[in-house]
Image (cartoon, rainbow, N blue to C red; front, side, top):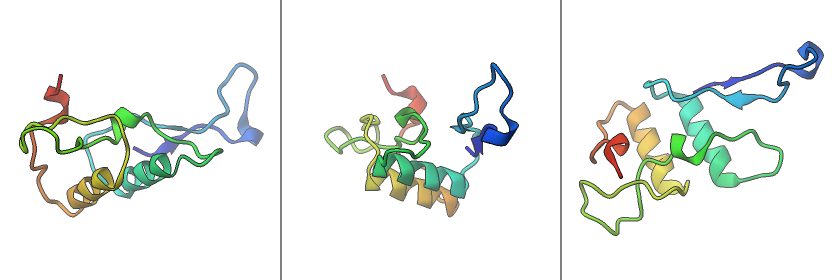
Length: 99
């Protein structure tokens, strides 16, 4: 999920000159970790992805295997993305299957 976009010097009339995160691509790399940390920080001026792109797990209120994402970026999500980066399997149901 790399940042894409044009720099101010490359901006053409009618084009978006704001950097944006590319949609999830099915591969976990350091860009995914960075995106989640940026969203967690919520610092003004940072280019951040939509929370649904980095929200990996909920608040543990449900069954351990089906606890759906909770639309919040926190250290649990960062932890799961780091584990995916290390090659560990996602231990819960597919987030895309959540209601």
